[in-house]
Amino acid sequence: SIPGSDILRRHRRRSTLLIGLDIEWRPNFRRGMNNPVATLQLCVGRRCLVFQILHAPFIPASLVSFLGDAKHTFVGVGIQGDVQKLLEDCSLRVANFVDLRSLAVEKLSDRMLNTAGLKTLGLRVLGVAVDKPKKITKSRWDNVLLSAEQVQYAAVDAFVSFEIGRRLSS
Image 1 (cartoon, helix red, strand yellow):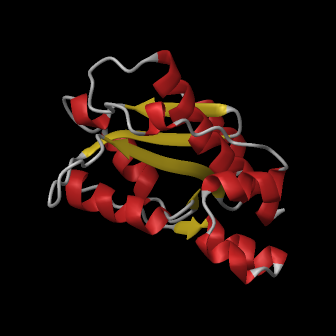
Image 2 (cartoon, rainbow, N blue to C red):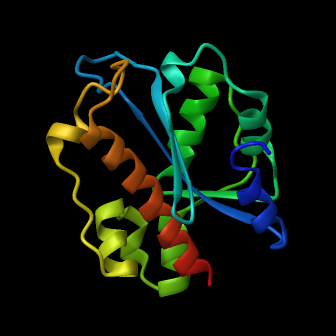
């Protein structure tokens, strides 16, 4: 069977599949600089994918259709920006996405969460402190080989997004 197809089968019983989504790219240190998406992170439950899209020889058709499936709801903080960057840099269209900030505002009746980051939402919704060390967030995401810390950070970001989305949707 195709890797991951068991995940799809298991979640197909639900009407929609919830997926944590995040992207990383090499930081833009100069004005007018716009580095392309380097990694795409997806997470469903405890299964996370960190796909080095920048170094991929091609984008699998299964990924294109997965992102483009309207039955899949992708969640993240400031996800509109990530979705826009995926479209501009990789010609990848994400059909259905929800910003966790607006979901949190709606579910927790707190308009202050409109500007919250993943750290704040993680603490508020999950009671978990999300570590976002600058040496990792500002690191070279365009490297062919990512460090173990980068991979962990990338997976945790997508996982926390998924968990916040799951908690707020239940």
